[in-house]
Image (cartoon, rainbow, N blue to C red):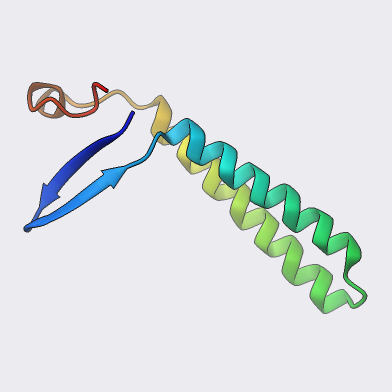
Length: 81
């Protein structure tokens, strides 16, 4: 689902939420690998926090993908690609 929306004169493009979720999951996995390579507890902790934040972003993208467009968006031709 890719569509644009205008608000206050600005155009926003929403990418395919499923692809976005997969990208965030890949980033989380990479952060986990990097955390294992860290030699300090601080570095490891920071990378694990980054990994968790990436996982949260993936979950958010999945929830967004599961939403159905509102009637107004469907009538305007958005959210139907």
